[in-house]
Image (tube, rainbow, N blue to C red; front, side):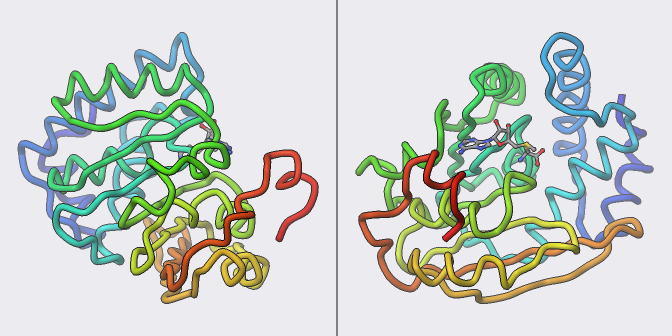
Length: 234
Ligand code: SAM
């Protein structure tokens, strides 16, 4: 399904990431299952093998190149969809303790079956981020929260920062057009501070990773409920 091992290694190495044979085999199983499952449940518009490799797997893996994820840390992927970015991270860094959250149960069902096939341990949450981050068992419990392609930076901050412990980080994977200034007010209100903005190119497309450090607890009134979040950004 995926381009062969040598070609896939070359593509990963063009982005400065090493690919082992073992990780390649997991990515290959992932690609096959994604395309198969996608015939009955809408998971992705990207189904061509080289595109899956570059636009899903390597794109997700770039987070590890630009952010130093501490060993054995806990990470929640908010609005993970078909597992991006966090399943590629877990394939490359099995030490990460992963929680996958999405509001669509059909995607969580896919992820449970995928993790079985890949022999990956993860926790799964079916529900809205703004509901679960109010619960004591999830609130400020994670070293990292991350998200790719879920919402603008202001909304995403409200969905993701409440999950992070003070001292941890929220990592947002974005396209180049993201207006960071649109998120700065929300980030501050939620107890965060922009630590780093990295712009890079991925196979000629521009990408941006925004890292927000959690510097103080999120006030109890956040996140607001989903109707309020939709109505007005912080
Ligand atoms: N992160 C994946 C990726 O990069 O391919 C999926 C992106 S998809 C455009 C957005 C996903 O976020 C969908 O699977 C949707 O169900 C989920 N989502 C949107 N708002 C959410 C919320 N408030 N709580 C949980 N999941 C949410």
